Image (cartoon, rainbow, N blue to C red):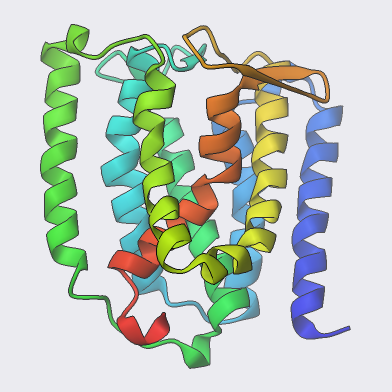
Length: 260
């Protein structure tokens, strides 16, 4: 068995072991931070020890997607009832549950680590960050700040009807661009997408069955899978597209052109 095949096997074993762990512990002990760290932390640590990673690019992507985009996205999600999180502590502006943002950051970090590990390799990467990074960060910071200000002072400006469908479409835009421009690249990411689907569905299943969150908003439809219901938007935007969209953004704004 080759080194990479062993790594794939280990990553899937992590998913199985984490699910087994949550199956046997009491629901009152299950929290969103615990789920995020156990599902995302061990594989991230394993891949980091297994082979060197370009942490400058990983952290840059975490900054942009996990924090700059993740913060207003999470704010909008709870404000417009795209989802409802029942935890009362750790709420920023008394509105949204901040550990979700930490979850976005961990998801982003693991996504880029998996991509670097299986698709590029440390010795084949070009060091440094694209010149497109700085202007896109400035632009996103301005937009994110504006959204947060509006959420705080004029929250009624945001519609609650099909809110998840509307603002969640941000995940579809980069994928759609690469489907048009580089369809073979998107096809090559399908195994990565499958891996993250398994993680995110596991997190969804545990979150819903443990009563950590619910979906009480307006949606275009529902998905019923293994005894749990959740919106089509959650299924498409998060489970199917988030990892692939993250890689598309990484390729477009963070990695240098030679890596494409």
